Length: 79
Image 1 (cartoon, rainbow, N blue to C red):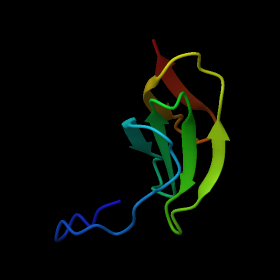
Image 2: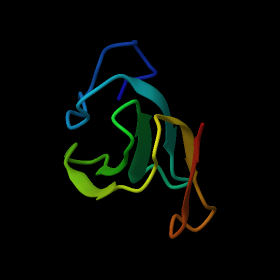
Image 3: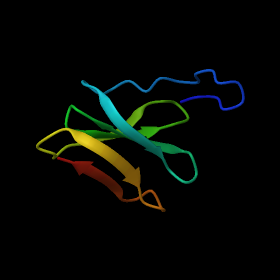
Image 4: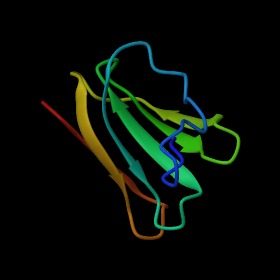
């Protein structure tokens, strides 16, 4: 996560075991969702940088992700 005022990093979200291909923020900025070559998406709490839940199920790398408008339904894409 980055500070948009001065471009400095605020927090690094650590948890994936391979390259991260995409990320998205919820509308209110409280959650982040990341997609990775490790075949998972991780839902993050942006205030403390801790993972809330790892989403498994893709058979191949996850190329992108997005939260729904209400942040209750994550969407992910894969090959």
